[in-house]
Length: 464
Image (cartoon, rainbow, N blue to C red):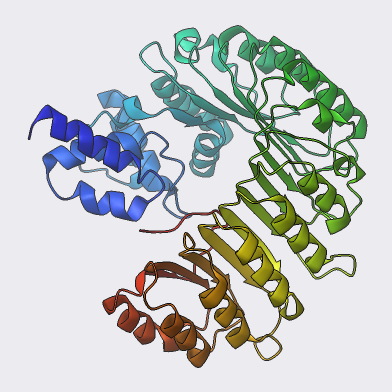
């Protein structure tokens, strides 16, 4: 196989970075594919780790240790008392760019008692932190107290870190070590919980040269003063921040400073006024993802985006008396002519508003509808008729989250779709057995290109 072909295959496989199933299938084709895919999977080995498979990952990691350490540890864990543990076929750890210290720590603590666990951690951390490694994403857990910046080679290992995730209860010496070694942080994720938050985090934020992304995961409403100080420290980076996510209503007017913001994610745990959104102007905002924010606050924000939004996701945990579905749909089709992807909760009485949206938003490619009404209360026939008759030409990607779906309603939708772009279809429902044969029939007629059942993700991703 030529080098050009190998390079092309590598680029193709990287596009399946989030599709473990297909990567595993391709990995078994031949040696070349295997050599291309293993580094991709081990770039972030923690991402696909399933509950109950921790020991398998630990086995692979410990197989990189010296012969003596490897055999002693593996004998203790895996009861391989009569066989030596072989060195791995690949240097898997060398491919790792994401270092999740929390997962490593939890796996080790589950196997060894405290005294032994410390020794094992040191040996395993040395595998990941040395002068030959270059970590790009670092995850530091709650109450982590190992001074990893003192490990030989840490400075060069962390010299290319672009993403840092840590708890704001982190100790001073760890923060100091991060400021000394992590000079290229561009993305920051902070977990704020009940307890003593470390204000030295503010110094870390100020030490960052250019911050492009910030995620504030706040799980405590007792940290108002700390959050206010934290938000004010972000003003320094106001011109460079392109992505902002928070799980708590801001304590300040920090959002108004992010004039170059491209992506805004708001995930509120409680229904409360977000008055800071109403007069907010974000002239370059392209992606808006919102959970549990009342519509009166949202409509003002959408109206002030000047038609730049191309992706909107709005959901609510429960039906709320103050949620005006009609008003939010109107705000979208009146102010978002360039919209490509939309996720929305819809009720029976808003189907006519959805039709207006489909007519106005002619660039729409993907539509994700969450239907909370019971099937007997929701007119699926009417919904599918509107989708078939009024969908813009570009729209062919559909996701539906139902309590259940009626066979005849779906068949009507598919019949009316004939002659259009074959659709990518996904359902989030537990009552789909009776429609699977129908789906296969319409796939053979090229009305459906592909269909996924029981999806659980919330992103705009469709399998091709």
